[in-house]
Length: 76
Ligand SMILES: [Zn+2]
Ligand SMILES: [Zn+2]
Image (cartoon, rainbow, N blue to C red; front, top):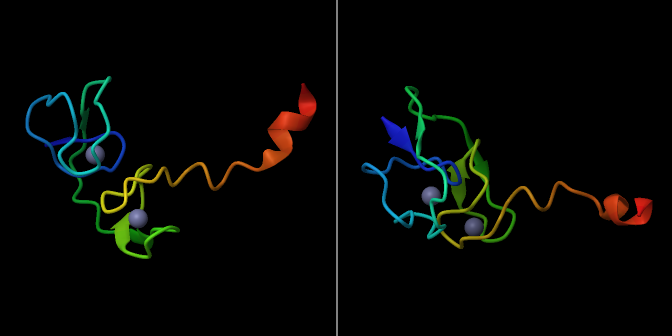
């Protein structure tokens, strides 16, 4: 089973764009053999997405950007 590396939804073969999260699939879809039961809430739309997802398949926001603090910018 192949999954989108961004939203972790199942995709067929290697579409140019993920039909779920609308991200361009620059990398190959990843092989995952688990069904992804764990869910988390999207910070932006509040809908449930897969725990591993980096992009919300509903509102297409990047979920992992929220975790990065602004502290990186201070170290230049
Ligand atoms: Zn996707
Ligand atoms: Zn969302």
